[in-house]
Structure formats: C-alpha cells, structure tokens
Length: 455
Image 1: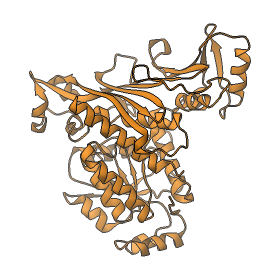
Image 2: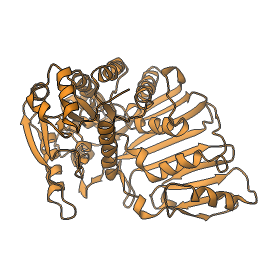
Image 3: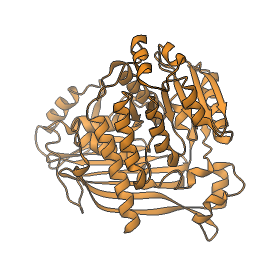
Image 4: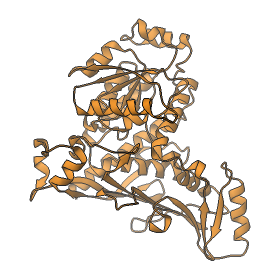
C-alpha cells in the first residue's frame, strides 16, 4: 500500500487534484497540519505533548461546546506553559454541533486526530478518508461487531484515496516489550515459540488499569460517557486492542495476517462496580447521567470494563486479559504481565510488588545448563540497546537491568508513535503488513465480544 509524503508541495498539489473536497488552503500546505476532532479522551492531548519538526504549530480543533473540549484545551495550555521544554502550539477552535461537517468543509489541515467517543469513531474515520484526509486514531477504531465492516471499508477507501489510516499503538515502544520481542527472535536464548493449547496458551498478556489516575502530574478527570460501554466500548474491545496487537507483532513479526488465521476459543466479560461517590470523584459530576441508568444495580454503577479472550492465531494459542479497578493502592499503578513460552526459555514481564510496580523482564530457562551465562551475555551484546545488564537470580532465572534512559513512560510513547506516523507520511514507507494486521486485530476483538455476549 502506497502513501504520499506530505512535505513536498508538488505532491500535495497532486493530492488536492485527486480529492474533490480540496481547497486552496490544502494546495498551499507544505507541512503536516493537525485537525483534532471532538477530543474527549486525554490521549488526544498527549499527541501534542511535544513539538515536531514536520508538524505545523497551528492545530485546528473542531468540537461541540462542553467540558471535554475545555479539558483538552487546558491540557494543551499546560504543555505550552510548563517550565521544562514548553511547547508552542497555536490552537484555533471551532465550537458547534456541526463540528465534523465544518471540519470536512473547511479542510484546513491534512491529518485528522481522533481520540474520543469510540462509538462515533468508526464513522468519523470513514468520513475522513472519504474526503481524502489522513487519520491518526487512538484505539480502538471499532467497538462493535456490526461496525467492523465499516472499518474494512475505511481501509479500502484510504488505499483508494492514497491517504494513511493508522492507530496509536503505544505499547510497542515500551522497552521491556521491545526486549521481549527481540529476545524471542534469538534461537539460542528462546528457541522456538511453543504452540500451546486452549487450556495452556503459549502467550499470555494481562493488563490492569484504574479509573482514578494521574496524568501529567494532575488527577485525570474522566468524562461521564467513558463509563458507558455503548460509547467507550467494553473492556474486551478496548484495552485488549493493545494486547492483541502485541501478540501479532511479537509472535508473527512482519507476517501479513488474515482473518482466517484467527479462531476465538473462549471469551468472557464482567463488570467493575463503582459507587456514586467513586463516580463523582473521578468525573466531577454530582449525579450519574441518565444514559447510565441501564447499568445501575443496587445503587451502584456496573461497568463492563473487564474481558478475557482465549484464541488461536495461526499455530499459536494466546490469552489476553484486561481488568479495570477503581483506584490503585498508594505507590502502585497500572500493571502489565506477559509471558512468551519458548522451547529453551520463557520470557516474562512482571510488574508486581517485587518489581516495585515497574515492568521488569525475566528470562527463565526451561532447565539449568552450563554455558547459559555465555549465551545470555552474547544475546545482550547483540541487542540494539546499549547498557542492558542482568542479574542471575538462580540456576534458571535472569532478571534484566535496563538503564533509566529507556524507561520513558506511557505518556512519552504517544510522541514516539506520532514520530513513526510522520515518517510513514513523509517517506511513504509504512510496512505492507500494517494495514492487514490492523484489520485482523479488530476482527479478533469484535469477534471475541460477539462470542462473550452469546456465552
């Protein structure tokens, strides 16, 4: 799939001539210009936590009036006014119920940033690419099986209109995950990925999140609709997107996947129960909105934010589990667990009390043998990151010691994804496997929801 670079004016002129909705402003652009639509999730702001050489400092925001918009603008202003490395974004805002129509009519930018109400996101994606606009979308791109075909249509239209549709997969940039993937390709250390089974998967990824959290040093205010699975999506189609993506990316790197490579073995869903006081603390709302009445039982809000999927991807059995709790104990936070089982060793990421709630990668050999230190030494010396060390905990277990410079944190990963997106736009070099594998990823999550709703 081919995508144009956006920097050269001649290419932008060609794009304009191919899209009937283009105007003179688009023809005159010589850089990437963002249009943020209805930024209801804080991830929209994190895309702008840093400046970029190839992105215009002027960003256009189109949204309805309301708290979501004001919180977004406050976050951008906090980046502009911070003491260390302040940004210099110039925000132009259009407020109105017709914000999306107006954005497509104005077409003053060439990249649409979508991070908000997930129920509307698939429609926004399709309308944007239909108009010849590139899209950088927060996950998930689709939350219900009935809209999956719309997403497939969006990718087809993006190819037809020669624009780039891409989702924000931040977890590929987490250092322990990158190391896990790299070491899984080392035959001396890992061997071959085991196939596993439906009852004993070869790969498991678990993620625990919290509704109450801090972002950029401040308590995150969640919108009320975030707790409505009809708008945000159930947990089984939301955060699982990251985990399914990582399984594809690590187990079958650079392999073009197909929907027929996926078989859902089992899927289940269950709620997180929040009191009215919990809801008020995290949203700032004195009353639970009426659209959540359907989810109130015995006076408490039941949010189906949790899900588990057991599935087969090609020859590998995998499990993903996502849980949402209200608030993490003091000194802790969101956690991640991951295991890849190989014929020589298991590669395990833990983030518990022993790890001080920071992700740590372990190599656990299937059996002790002489010369294992030399093999680990050699594998680490071949890594593309310098300064990685290890401690040997027992005859079979090694704990990797990673320099702090690689531990940039979740918020910084948004800039890394955006940099990658810029590279794809300007250099027309997005790998051929990315689009088909995005489609397979959302096929997996939506089919899992379909099964969980039946079982």
